[in-house]
Image 1 (cartoon, rainbow, N blue to C red):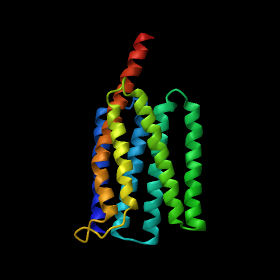
Image 2 (cartoon, one colour):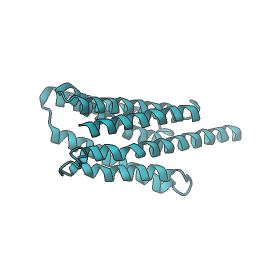
Image 3 (tube, rainbow, N blue to C red):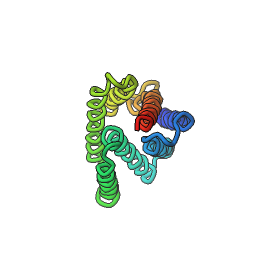
Length: 217
């Protein structure tokens, strides 16, 4: 699957470039800095194994591709929770993080030790993804008047959800190379850039807000 492999590589490259830009632009003192950097590394790992899987399809590379993709989905939910709730409720974040880790462990254990169920994996990831999208959009709608950069987040998650519909399509590959899965991977490349741009803007906003708060105190 050369198109999917190349698109996965480009997604990983985009994530790496944006991670480097994020670290160059955002001081570590920003409240969401550790979570955003961790999200970038989890994403990079997933795109690496996606590239490997689409280059060499084996039982092991398939599992690593699927499991790492699930980790990205769950870390996206964690990132959303940290940004929307966790800055004021650190105890809640600890509980939610533990829940997500247990869920991921159970998910991987079931698929590895019981049955590699493609349908279950699809439903589990789709459900977690749609919940995260709805969560982000609700927050964006509430914060849009105060935070002009949230449009980037809303656009990224909406377009990502729209692109996900390609995974449900089945058509003959265009030019014998570009199937629905490859087009899905190609479409996510600019969305990586857009979402990381939001993370940079938002982290800098939070850093400034904290700095202003300390000045008032």
